[in-house]
Image (cartoon, rainbow, N blue to C red; front, side, top):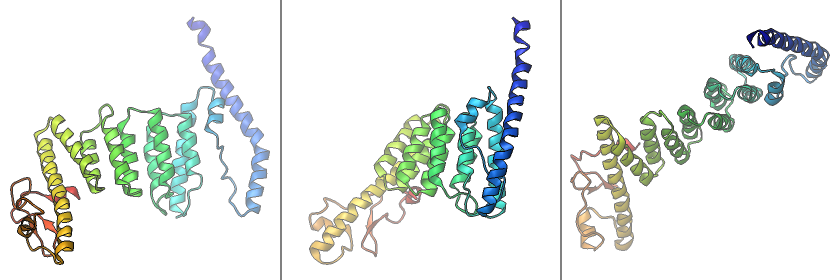
Length: 298
């Protein structure tokens, strides 16, 4: 069995390199014609690339990984040259990355760093967060249990698109992948709160508190839960203060006025028991000495 099988390896390799050499020879007239056309159009010669990763995969004769490495190197070199020349566009970057990841769907570095190259704003990058997200989603389909891709996708949604709700959902989903870091849940909760999704953030922090095995994480969860509850109470009180202003024609100086008007049963307190107050701006706020830290929600 070994004697019969052993000659196939060098034969296969020789066939591959022979076909590759023939393909390069056949490309010479075509490349010259393309270069002449590019020069007449004002473009630099030597910048055309094969655009179909599937076509290359069929011609690779089992060397998809090798070709993927070659195209990933091309992508990095192209990005580096474009950045050094301070181009405002990276027209071929997305195509090179698609070819690379089609040849090797498990080349994780191409998804992660490729997404950074695509999402970064010009002149440092292509300024295409949409293409970066497409690349990462393709990576997630091919590598569903690799939680870092969810992390990268969430950061693009948060930093580049300013979509806190989508980012929070992505971080939460990523936190459920095998081996995901515990801070993915805390990140999801924090981003949800920043985006105004207080109930989602509250549910996430409660889950963190219940499942965390680290005392400091549990304590942090309690502090965030207290801040979220206080923020919800403040928002509700501000609505009552607005009603009082419309009804009475002036702002309330204290919550006692709302009690007298029948809008509250008693003066409110925060989750730590400290009385809430009405500030000079006529809005509810934490009272002096309150241990609640609302900055945790920013």
